[in-house]
Image (cartoon, rainbow, N blue to C red; front, side, top):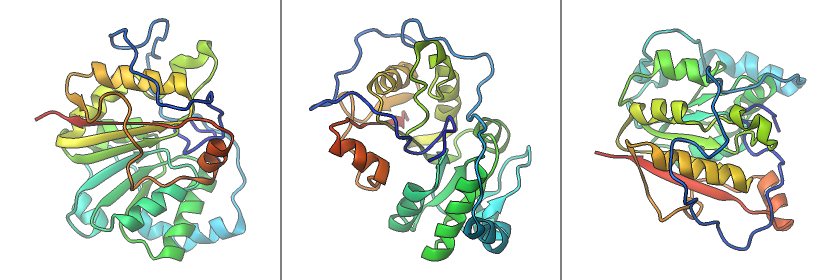
Length: 257
């Protein structure tokens, strides 16, 4: 899988846990000792080889499903050819979970940001193979997409699954889930819209829970972590981790009215 900051399901190994951890007791905008970078960035570029099949998918399906980045508000109805609830996904890796969710939720539109070219090609290939029509891809930094293409109150949901955990404490500041980004996302959710994050790294899960809990526009849907929503599938990496006894944590918050 991609090693982008917004990667979907990296093979990181969270500590074994039989039950979900409780919420951290310390309150604040970020966990103690963890600062956020001055400039938010949703990814780290890495090298990767695009396969012949992925390249063909770019050729066959890219013109329809890959949107150009433009620093202007997105006309989602025109982009998708219909009016429907809009869900933003940040970092879809190779697109396995994205394609599954789009298939089981055909009435929703999914705007998906990923910069890793093999991952974009892989998702385009899945779109073609599965006949999906409710996905559009922006191969661009999600933060700039949020800042310039998504006005306040436009989103019905946000998915951030298995972002890079940046395990070492000195690198924690590189983590995607930080107060500035969460504030941007919360402002772009409609009242009642949701933000769903998942990780297989317990310290990051605790940071996610604390940062989201500190955002005044958001409210937790559970008392701490939530059971895995039925629309999010188990990826092959997640299944492997579960067989090894690793934990997976989901958090789902909603925008207050």
